[in-house]
Image (cartoon, rainbow, N blue to C red; front, side, top):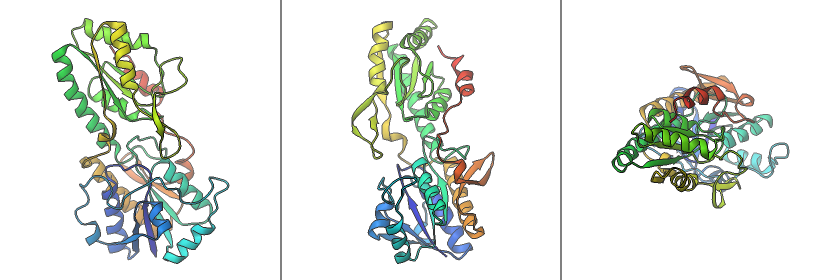
Length: 344
């Protein structure tokens, strides 16, 4: 069996470890032939690929980014319900590809679902720092992003305490606030603002003032997709992202002067940005990604196509793609409610 491995969407710490795990199990144990497409679907369209074997993946477990490269190039014309796979099948035959392992988040696994419905053998490996993919408890890359954001909170606290300032840290999270929730809890933030739960400016200022009144310099952690109560839109920058959506960013830079104006407390904003994606993955993400790759290779051997290697408790289980796509895994109300009581 010849399997094509492909990464799509944004990079995420642990992707190299996942490729290594899948390759060592697939090639050395199961006897597959595996190739990796360079820069995702761009490499598939252009016929740019590299063989995957033990030497190709040597030493990759702790390396950040993804050595194959990734992109947001679409796999075929049309969308769900109208995707034209004619050229796609021609390419598969030309390359001698029998099946795919697709490493990515919601968009990538939606493509995997389309391919599965069209009869193309495919297995999904879930990655996204946002942890917003259904069908798995955690995605690799998330723990690393939270660890980086938590370290940033610790560093901002020391300068905030020194100047009696309110520090507002913006982290990634368009529609799901998992990074902000976990990092904010780890750093003991006085307020955590998520896309799922709008809050008023007055409420946010009350939390900041409460911290000041207790002798604390407040830390506010906000996800980039957060909207103030009564607002219809998140804060955006110029241009569109790879999916044609408005590019988010800058909500912390909007909130900080508003907090300062309403409370009289000096406030400073920090936008963490792509630092969250970069660098070496944590040990947790290395292990999770490696186990995910191994499970995907085992699923290919067993013919468990149309599934995703999801973490359920402490086990990697093959979850039908239908359970993983079509809806985001957002922060549930009970998770926000339990921590909101501690704000201020």
